[in-house]
Amino acid sequence: MAIRFEKVNFSYGAGTTLAQSILHDVTLEMPTGQVTAIVGQTGSGKSTLIQHINGLLKPTSGRVTIDNFELTHHTKEKELVKLRKSVGIAFQFPENQLFANTVLEDVMYAPVNFGATKSEAKLAAEHALTRTGVVRELWGKSPFELSGGQMRRVAMAGTLSSDPSVVVMDEPAAGLDPKGQGELLQLVLELKKLGKTIVIISHQMDHVIAVADHVVVMHEGRVVAQESPQILFNRDITWFKTMKLDLPKAGQLAEKLRDEGITLSRRPLTLNELADLINTEVSHE
Ligand SMILES: Nc1ncnc2c1ncn2[C@@H]1O[C@H](COP(=O)(O)OP(=O)(O)OP(=O)(O)O)[C@@H](O)[C@H]1O
Ligand SMILES: [Mg+2]
Image 1 (cartoon, helix red, strand yellow):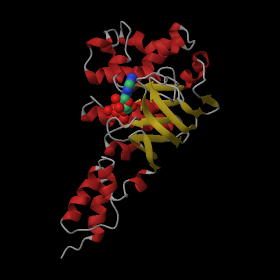
Image 2 (cartoon, protein in one colour; image 1 turned 60 degrees about the vertical axis):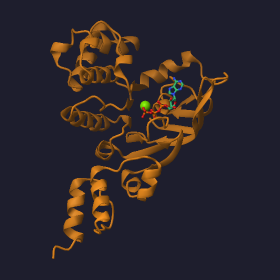
Image 3 (spheres, rainbow, N blue to C red; image 1 turned 90 degrees about the vertical axis):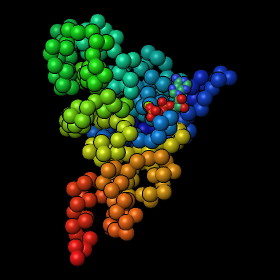
Image 4 (tube, rainbow, N blue to C red; image 1 turned 120 degrees about the vertical axis):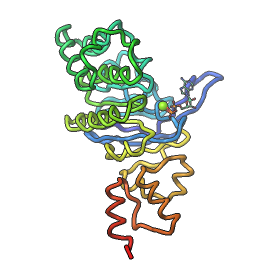
């Protein structure tokens, strides 16, 4: 499903005296079947932006198209049912997403809501819980008894159980240990293989490098870059400072080398690439 934002402006509390203008003329594209990462400093509008993909928020002006669905200020709530079936969002704070008495019931909610029978929903939920690494012993527990990392996995399963074609993840690695983070990145790549269009918000540039085909950079509610990771992470270092954006680890190390007088022909994205560049470009005399 192709996702396109055209001149989207958004204010919380639009039309009231408390209106707060957050997104400014956002125009962007998230290619079908690819992984788009959204990055940018805290408060730059990332979570606000992605809530437009399933119509949880509607543009104050401008429009969002998701395949052949058009979302504008005028879209009615009942028209959104179809959109919500195709777009699953795993929210930034999973505790706000969970609600049922047990983990299994929570994850069954979306398929039931979209018309599956109880037994179909149970199968779908079990499949999603297995895929996100929630062990069977937890399925009967209350989601609120779980650790932060487990809640994150359950919420992710709840997003995947209705098999949406667009999967949006808002900082899905937050609260996961390094092993969990690795599994999450694997999951993103698996979902991509299944043909899904994926949008992932992250503050970890090494995660972006690991999964993203396309990166959108937000700064103070505006899109300031949308390009491949290769192009993005070779931008001038002063730009990253202005945008308050980190480089991936390999890029940070390359900058340290440069401070020591060792200049490489390009900024590496991964540690392997850094090692190759050092081997071929730095003299060993
Ligand atoms: N419900 C709301 N009502 C009013 N203002 C809000 C609301 N939610 C967010 N904001 C404001 O909108 C701006 C953008 O917030 P948003 O959560 O979209 O940023 P973000 O890029 O996701 O940040 P983070 O990286 O911290 O998650 C911030 O100034 C925030 O305070
Ligand atoms: Mg956010």
